[in-house]
Image 1 (cartoon, rainbow, N blue to C red):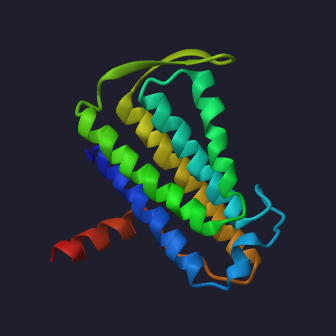
Image 2: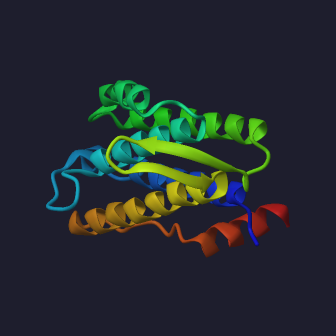
Image 3: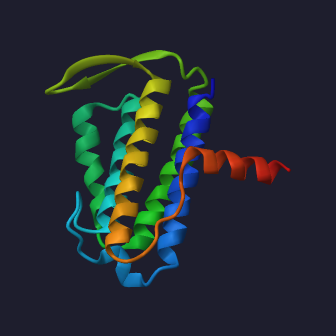
Length: 169
């Protein structure tokens, strides 16, 4: 079976594809209001960064309230695609640091949520949640781009595998 680290690498690859694609569209595209889950593409991408930040901190054992209190720092990137992309790059680096420290991703850890309670999970399952969450919202971005008369960009896992194979070839 493919390991969680590879799925995270796919997540990073797919996010980069989205950012690159949006950079090649008219600048206002990222900020145009759309009737969707989020008001704009940039809002979706900021949400994805915020979620990745939160889950990285959960994986790192940071207390819930401390995570929530510190997640607000990402809000300064609102409406600024360059800042959102920078946050995404920093998070990717931080996840790789996490992977270098936590080599046993099948290890169980406990997370606490004030309303949902306690949950035991493996690091791998939590990382798969991060990837799945990103996949869902990259789909939102594609739908929003289509509403704005722009094409999306393929970010399916198989495209990642093909590209990965080509880069080895």
